[in-house]
Length: 133
Image 1 (cartoon, one colour):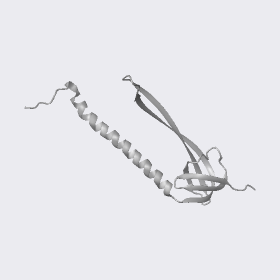
Image 2 (cartoon, one colour; image 1 turned 90 degrees about the vertical axis):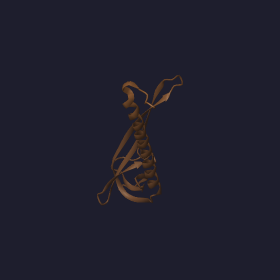
Image 3 (cartoon, rainbow, N blue to C red; image 1 turned 45 degrees about the horizontal axis):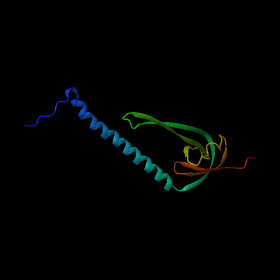
Image 4 (cartoon, rainbow, N blue to C red; image 1 turned 135 degrees about the vertical axis):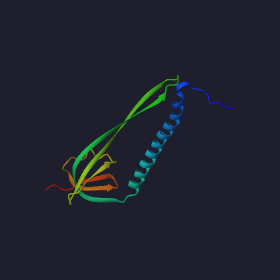
């Protein structure tokens, strides 16, 4: 007759850990698929040129910590961060929309600038100031 090995009070732990690993793995896969789908949606969107005014700029810093083996059995935390830049445009009809800056325009425009913005999906890819009179 087969009997299950006794792990003391750790039996529940060995049944929860695999479920936790599957959940974390699923979350990572869903994130990768979602980000990939968003990228391809924006990349395939038509590029439009619209007259607009820059009404806001913001940046978002995302931090990530992962642990890597140091070769001697220990784990070293590795920290990384990425900064995302956003530019909000206001159009002639009063509508506003925030765009992800994928062409490093953040430092080239200031709030109040008016001109033609090239937008592609959720991205702003160019901005040309209009003549100021």
